[in-house]
Amino acid sequence: VQLQASGGGSVQVGGSLKLSCAASGAILSAFRESMGWYRQAPGKEREFVAEITDSGPPTYADFVKGRFTISRDNVKRRVYLQMNGLEPEDTAIYYCRSNVYNSWGQGTQVTVSS
Image (cartoon, rainbow, N blue to C red; front, top):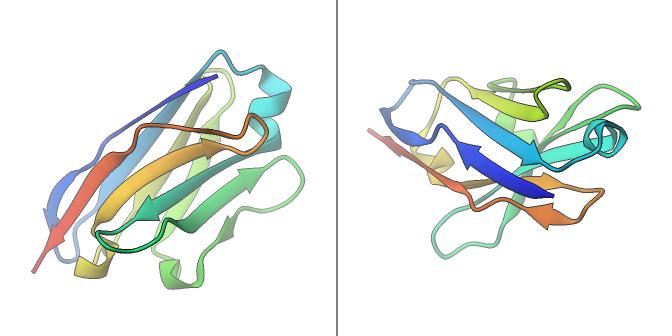
């Protein structure tokens, strides 16, 4: 499977962005089973942001604090991350991941300035 993330950019504090990840070659069951978003800030390790599965409600990192929403379109094989109330600490490269295929996308840069 190939994962292509897009939608990053530069915004000011309090702004919003919607990230998109296309999962090419993913069979539906694997796509639905588990897809996630992670991020890596400069000088820091990659960290979990959100996950959507077929077995329960989405899960989020504590720092999301209700600001982000993960969703998916099974027909298009796309997973999204709507990010609102962005803060400078959200600046990072955001990656999507297929937990079933153990595959990462190339990442999309999000920069939040004050």
